Length: 610
Image (tube, rainbow, N blue to C red):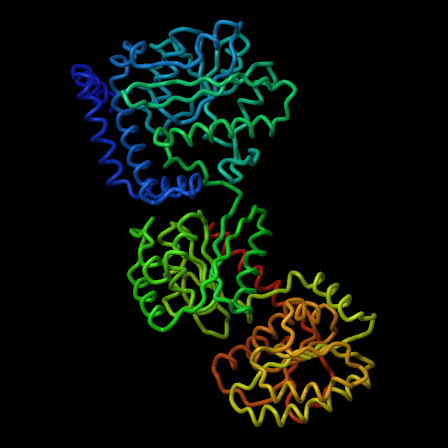
């Protein structure tokens, strides 16, 4: 392998510079065309750095970056041919001011932009110069590169111990800051994301009282290189994190000006601790609550979470059919393309989602599922769907689906009931108590939904249940909080008002059609010891059990849907079922919180895809 590379180099030395550059461009274009994984990584990294840029602009930068990389390969293979003409090929801004007044060596800190091997050789021609390198997997290539470096008077160090010797001997030191971050590296903001940033250069500068000079180079329009050297940073009395912030800011400005000179397919953001989330909201409160619950679970994974909420109302049957058809055909080849979103859902929505970067797209319910899949493929993001989608769940990166839906697939995690928890419950409780001037009593909460099978049976049984509930309240010395839902029929709401408005132990009575304040549910659950919920409301039963409340499922009608029957079976051991004649006694507390159970299984699943 070594001999083959040497022969190749000898041949390349014979070729004119123009031809070498042309061959480099060809290599870069081929690399761009056939390296889909690196192209994908480059797109994601660029979109994070420049979310406002269009896909067309980003792919153009990627193509130019690959082309520059191809040229750099040819330059390095014919290294000596190019470096002999360094005076005409390399222009350094600020070199006179930089070196004239400096005694002794300091640290030059760069990133993977331009041709760093060229820049090292250029500095080594003028000053005593040492670099720290990482050992390569390809030993033949490593041997060849290091031979070229040594012929250029560069001292090559493979360990910090070796490098320190040269620092003490006042050598100039060349390091890069954008790779090789150790696991315990500080998380520093870089293009809006917390990224592990190597601190070795700053540590050495502080320890040996050296200045750090940020350096970056780029290929200009004439095919030559320009090296820019920033003013030195005196780190002696500076906080480590503050210096790293300054350095990242400097390189952000440079990359904004010259993005095509950077190796964007390098996994610079792979270990970032910022998660960017897109939540698709179909304006159904229950669905949105479940999406927000997942967001709160993600925050517990020690990530900085930034979320965008996009409201998507009015999906009619025609639009839904078209979206499902597009979702069926969507794939990773759709990266950067959102034409179907623009055509079906309109330019306004397209503008919102095309100018942001996200790591995950989250949606709840079948209506949002095809949009989730289309957007996640277009953005190169992970797709997480909550509740059973109308598309194969294995098309998504993660499906969070209740046990009672009986969906088993490789990318599905099953939860009990709904993924919901009133995280604002304490605030809701405070608002509720202030609004209604409530005192400290023992309370029960009554949540009334609506009939699924028979309105008549539902209402007749409600008239039997309410007197029994009042007896229980008097006997146990409880006060009561009563509310309805958007599905509650008007005649049921009227009945409840007649029964509880003048009831002595009624603290709060709200009818959803008159008062749909967001603090009602969380406030009721926080104040109540026992929750009575009609059997139609899976989400409300789930929320009550999530808070560990003694929960009574009030069966006002016979429910025959498989969906509900499976749900009741999955929570049978932690809920109280109350049927006619509604005698309330011997209520059992749940042995565990379904939220804690759901949180555990969801966390484990999410960790696998981050």
